[in-house]
Image 1 (spheres, rainbow, N blue to C red):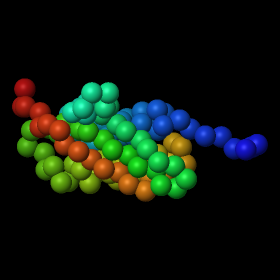
Image 2 (cartoon, helix red, strand yellow):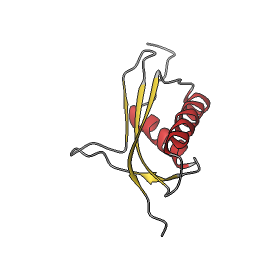
Image 3 (cartoon, helix red, strand yellow):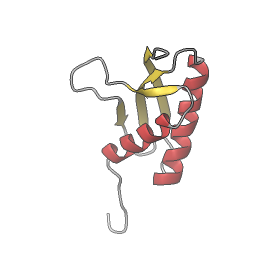
Length: 100
């Protein structure tokens, strides 16, 4: 494939993580519940890229609203930074942070 570049899924996962952390109400990212499962997984390709993020929300934040904002921000960020528009952005809230 002369003249084409590709971006690794690890870089796309970092971009998605950075974008999620920018959203108000996101306290941080959480490792997945299974061994060797990370907070952000990127899979697929050829126009069917799928992003799954495991997040921890702030106490008192609206989980549905935070989830929608994370989806929107991740889509925007990947499009602007890597010219990639994911087919799906799935947000899993693994925990709610305490007020401390």
